Image (cartoon, rainbow, N blue to C red; front, side, top):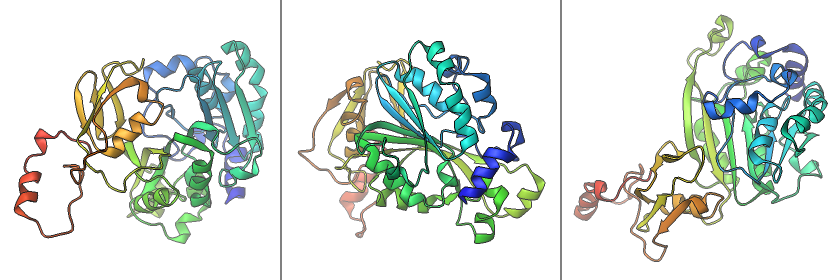
Length: 354
């Protein structure tokens, strides 16, 4: 599968226009505030970038960031501007032709930005431990833009990411998922694989793998269904549904396996430059500036024990436990009691966490 991907992205594709589907795109369009960053990137890097969207989480200034499957370096050079001269960005890719483009513009971007804070290394994303420059626990944030599906060993990718992240660090990435497990004839089809469809995980298998790797509570940020426009490929995947989705996985050792209620709440200060009115943690948490927002214990830790802490006020602690957080889609395995029914009928007084 490595050979298929290296040939497809190194020799078969000349530009994004050569892709047969839109699968190799993250779930969102590039927001307006990021577009000026792209205007400073070398045209060769943009031309050889195979995808769309841009995986760029909030609060990166001064952070150390790793991009898995960095390709021609477009996302790396955008992220380099976000972390600033006090931060750094590392790109890892296995395709020589892509790395040549990325490395060939190092001087251009250093001059355009006014600082040099970027490195590129050749390697496989499922063998990150074989790249000596990548030290365990040395990254604040790891990103990836529709690349994990191209790996033949996804558990190894997630394990490597977990090892490289600092405690409180985050894996923020977009990828392709399927509605069910693909048969081997589809998962090994060269074009489907290169188009980010053949390697797509069944979404529930992904959640299982993430938890096994130490990411206890995966959070879905956004998603969109994918249409396979190419007629031949569409016939091959008939009956399967594909989705582009962005997840965030936090390396936090004390997360509960479920959303537990400790009577906590947060108040967003509105101090993140790109999110003055509300902070979006995931698809279920849009936290309006200045409003007391009840949260489960996991959401509390994702805000308090990470780079986001300075942007919030925190109410409560873990001294009292009130059971499962209402509205999180889970319930007691025991027979419903009158008290449980009464509690379930009054979630509006508690707010909504998940």
